[in-house]
Length: 299
Image 1 (tube, one colour):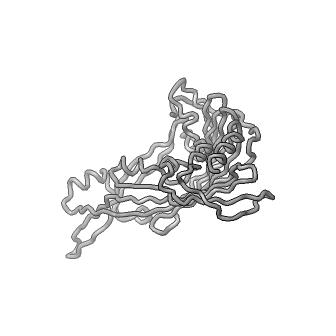
Image 2: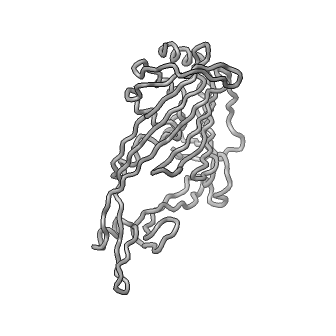
Image 3: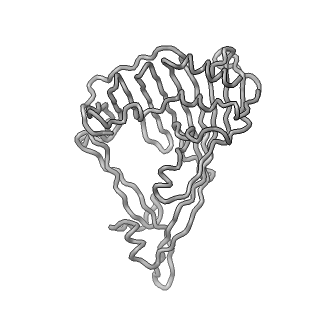
């Protein structure tokens, strides 16, 4: 059954489609991520409209038309860094191209017989009667599913920064129509991250004061169409209430002050991602944006 669903869905989505991905994530019980990705594709042309609502990051768009890469967002010019605009990467090689846009059809790889899908009822959506299927054995699902928008990633950034990290799929639900074509998917992910944390203690008037020592990232506007620069700063306290800003990196502060103590913190996060397949098989109009600013080397 599940092989037939995967095959039927792959056929109708082979040339064109429209997918809307909605995600919501929590870390240590608090919501810290939410947003949507609206992806259309037709032939080799793709368009991804990303709206991140938590933390608020506005709208950005990645688009590929006839092998050319376009991007819409803020921070591309120094004179008006907050004004969104289109840019066109004219680099002969090395631009992100299709790799910057996730292909939602790869989600169909999750439809594996070893996941042991079982029937979980029916639901009517948009006037279409859908059968609800639920995976009983999510441990066999491919780890690369964690790379879809909002899923929390594959721990690459955490491991690059020296943190311990593990992520996995914890639930998968699928809704299919009477022609065995997938209309909806819902996935749940979990991640456990162990990160080093540092505190610095100082004696003031006979009283020992202990504060967190935190690296924060400051964003400075780019110039001439280049990306904004990310600058690290070291603070005592919290990003919301800094008590002191150091004029050197946290690494140097830790090396030069014996009162810095290292701790290990464990963070547990979870994400639910809902996927809706819209305009199934219908051609999508994806055109090059007019008045895009030509730039080189944005890849």
